[in-house]
Amino acid sequence: MQITVDIPDAIAQHWGPLQDELSKLLALGLIEVNANPTMRFSGLAEVLAFFAKQPASEEIFGLRLSETAQAQVEDLLDRNRDGGLNPAEQQVWQQYEFVEHLVRMAKAEALLKLQAAA
Image 1 (cartoon, rainbow, N blue to C red):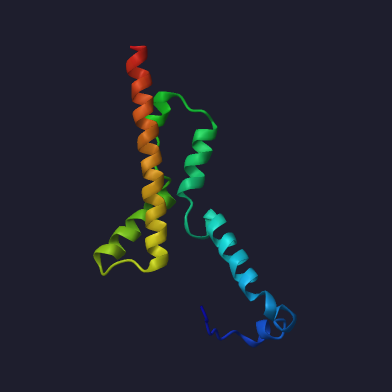
Image 2 (cartoon, rainbow, N blue to C red):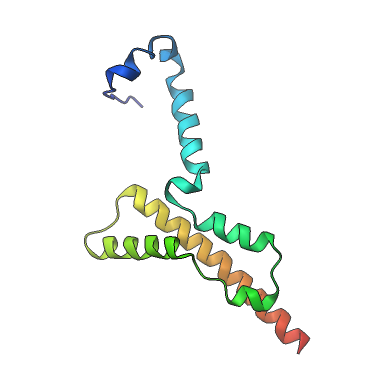
């Protein structure tokens, strides 16, 4: 695939020795973007931090998104209603759907544990 990109002069002056490494640089940049939840998506980091504390079953039922994450979900829902999501927003939405699935599974397991203990 061939891509044409206009870059600012400040970047272009450093580009010369790196021209042959473009595909590697783009790949590393994509990895960084996808690995950094604070750039667009913090929901998974919040949920992992919660589960890292090994909460009791009762605590799992109380798990909710932070106000920041909830606001992002609501914004995505509004954007979707107003005309659809662009590809980046669609990716963030899919990440929230995945996290929601994980939380539902954890809550179902917690319910089973509580029922077994009763």
